[in-house]
Image (cartoon, rainbow, N blue to C red; front, top):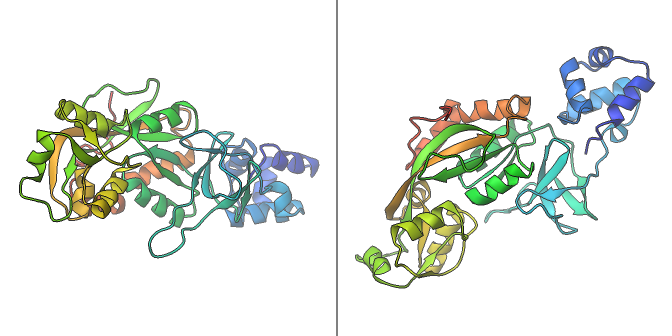
Amino acid sequence: MVSNTSLRQVRTGAGLTQGELAARSGVSRQLIGAVESGRHLPRVDAALAMATALGVDVADLFPTRSEAVDVVTGSAPAVGTMVRFGRVGDTMVTRPLRSGRDGWGVADGIMDQGNIRVFDVSGPGMVIVGCEPGLEILETMLRQEGAGALAVAASSRSAVEALSAGRAHAAIVHGSGESPPISGVERFRFATWRVGLSAPPEPAQDWFQRLLDGPAAIVQRETGAAAQEALLDAIPHLVPSGPVAGSHLEAVQIGIHTGMAALTIEPVAVAAGLEFRPLETHRVDLLVDPRWRHDPAVSSAMSVMGSSRFLGRLRAFGGYDLSEHGTKVA
């Protein structure tokens, strides 16, 4: 990926100011400055224009290798892992490629000895982590606009850890309380939805009461996840057993496959056509590292999150209360 110094070195070696290179390339001076500072990656057309203006190969300005870590774990992905990736300051972050039932997903690159061999140069984008299924919609919409967005499904606890470690620009967290789980961030209300249990396929009429009465096999979330805490708070005597899912959507998918009830959120249960029994109402908040609040990639992503085309898609799934969406929380 982009070296923080390569473009500056070539430009100054050619005796050009940022403004002069911008004029020759047909891009803004602000973009040149952002690329040289390491805050942004240019789109493919802009990268080619800069290289042409400087009389060098685009690969010399924007090398296609960089050390990278996993967004959630902070560890280096295994060699040969196909990934999607983003950049937070000087940190390259990745998530493993996910392929759907109907075909292959689109990878940004492949891991090679701790570096990314990039398939294509992408534009800068927001890296956001959390357990809100709508983040997948956000990533798709931003990538359609040419931004290298990266949305990663993870529990609120893991999202906060990634944000605190500087591996994400923002995190989506949820819980029943108002106190932010991390200090020194800007906080905005994203939504309100309910955490609860989705019924197993073809449930018995008393399926929920059976869960309340004793030990039960439930598709759960990891220890410390906000939904898991809600389950234990709502039913203190419950001794749940069963598989642990990595996201609300995965929990329901496992539940459908195994015939178990699943710990999830109402929008996911509604979208899957399952009966849902609420346990707790949670406020869902967007936490933004103030260092990146006015970064163009982050500002653009937040604008998309507030747009009618994004919110309309969430409303169509059902289970969302978006009346306070975008409100800054003190």
